[in-house]
Image 1: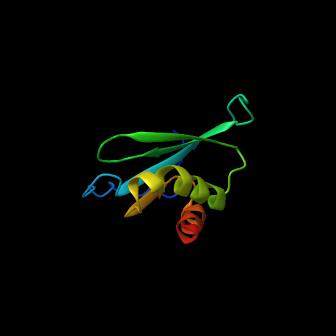
Image 2 (image 1 turned 90 degrees about the horizontal axis):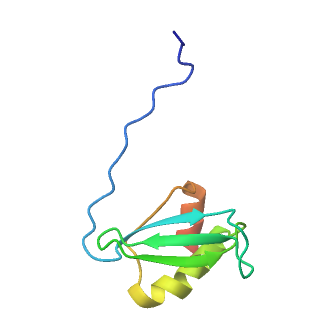
Length: 101
């Protein structure tokens, strides 16, 4: 029998229910893809309510500032400002992304 050497994991928290389309936006990156037309990653922006998505070509080295510029250029002009931003890139990334927006 193995002994656990780390603290028990916390419980998962559900995302809030969106009040309208494009109010809660999960963003994820698919990276290290084979290079095509100079791009090697995809930024995926999904509408939590309508399950519609934008797939934006980018680079593996994209920073939070670059992601905010891509969001502004491809998503903001169509859907406006968001209420909540969800990402698995870490709290520093989310803070810098929202600050840049």
